Length: 272
Image 1 (cartoon, helix red, strand yellow):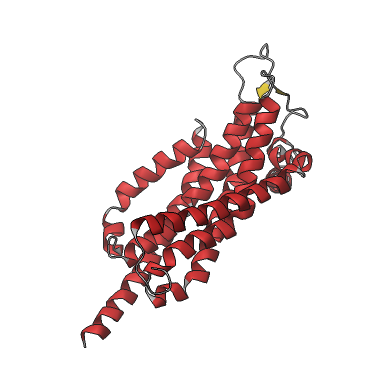
Image 2 (spheres, one colour):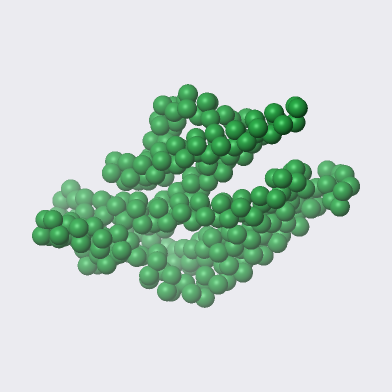
């Protein structure tokens, strides 16, 4: 609806197009901001997990020195990255700027999409729109940070230190590292939106907490599959990714139960 009047299908399409265009403009502005800070981002954030002074490794080594008297993680001083194609660096720079622009513009993107959906919602649901926008942004960033600080460093550590022969001299491809970076960081960011999806599906009567509890074992298997897809082939990275996802599933059950009780209470009040 628009101003209390029913809109035609083409009217909705036109409305959606306006929201999407504004989202694209926001992504472009965010991408430009990232582009002009690209060198710093690449040196300090993008390639941060390949250095021994990365916060995750520093914390692990502090505990290791305290109890074992030696560092637990020692990466090579150099991380040789090569490019094999003429425009490979430019393509990677564009990808980093694009996805970085999405992250920068994410709160605005969520707000625009919510503006499109909100006219079809009840007044009480629209009242909670601010909390919904904050929750989506918070969970995505939390998941991305989890992937960046907890999973990516161990995946890189395993890949760098695993050797089958000293004759082999490592030279890492820039595109492979870029794919691994976004696979883990963005993958965890998207997966962490699961509670929002569960809460929404519970709110419209598709999911119930009983269903989530009944199929918990099936969900654990699915979570392990998702963790294997997000992470590389090593088991350690997969297990590290699976732990927060399992906790997230339990949190989603509690969130679903809360929403389900609220809906039952509202239905009881309406029936009186």
